[in-house]
Amino acid sequence: MKTVVCYPMRSLVWGFIPPEFEVLAVDDDSTFYLQVIKYQPKLAVMFTEAFRQPVWDWVPALSLCLSDEIRKVIIPLHQDEALVQEIVTRKQIPNTYVLSASLSHDEIHQQLRLLTNLSTASVAKNMEVRETAQQGRVFSLIGAGSPGITTFCINFPLLLARQYPHKRIAVIDMNIQKPDLSSFFQLSKHQLARFRPDLIDARQAKKRDWLALCKPSEFSENLFYANAAAAWRNYELNMLLDVLRSHFDLVYLDWGNILPQREMMHLLLRESDQTMLFTRPDPFNLHLAAKLIEQYKNPAYSLQLIVSPFHKEEMSLRKISETVGVSVSQFIPYVEEGRLIQSLQSRSILVQELFPPKTYTNGLKMFIREEQAWEGVPHSK
Image 1 (tube, helix red, strand yellow):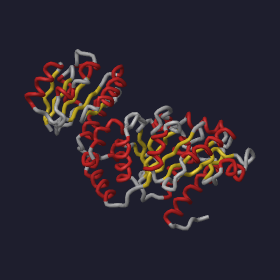
Image 2: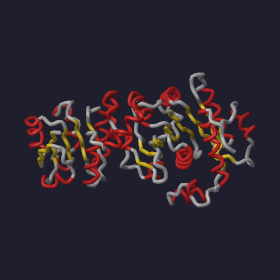
Image 3: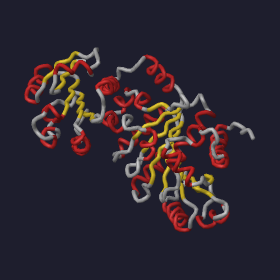
Image 4: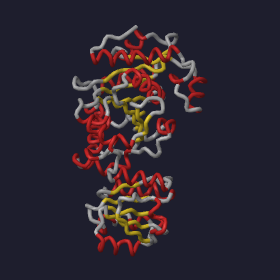
């Protein structure tokens, strides 16, 4: 692939560029633009430190200086990263990808391979097998007041993956305000939003190896994690859900609290196979849940009410159902706060511990029974 790289130290360029690339390296912005015109590359890699102008001047002008067909990769300094990402998103600069400022040369090498689809044969084979299978299902998890969505996403998918080793499962952090799932699994280098230019066109999105962008679980080979916490446009989100369905059998999206975003709520309810509304069993949160269920009542929507954390001494399930006006689909048992905090601080998965909390684990297994019921498989006691 013909490539022009703008990096302040040209001698180091070949340390992070894949050997398959035909590279022309320059060390300043003026030479870079001249060589792009002359060389007509397929890929342009730009390090912000090599440009004399501030990023708010030269980044918005990329669509004027470089053709839309050129794949553009920007690798910013830490101080520039947020601003560059915002400019590219707001200006909708075509075919432009922003990598993390914290990447090492080896990691830049890997990201460039991913961007240009230089993936391994084994991954390509996995993609081909999955494309011939039934489309996956998407579960959107929402709620307010810290009802334990992230803790559920940390623990339940691992139990599910072990129960269904033949199914490929994804857990995606969509929570912009509190990306705790990304922090727990350290997903800063597995951000799907960096590849959002691929979501403009269905053919381009299908070419991307999205599985390779996710972080595999160290405990189960069929479980994967990724960060997608970003301000998605509707068409981008629709396309993202489509590609996730094509790569995974089951997809769990941790949205956190998006309840005030009415348009996004309707989009999730419409596009998700199931939306799981988590609520704490206190009067204020139950009344909020009741209001939301009434507000978004629609036969076409699949909305489940999940009570979390549930403590039978506080309020019975029957009383909760009467308060909300709908039956409780599932509940997640209470875990002692100290035990929960300790597991989060140590990045320990509760169900993976030597002595996991039995009541909590048994509560999660009830969700597995629901999956078995969906498949028509009798559950074992």
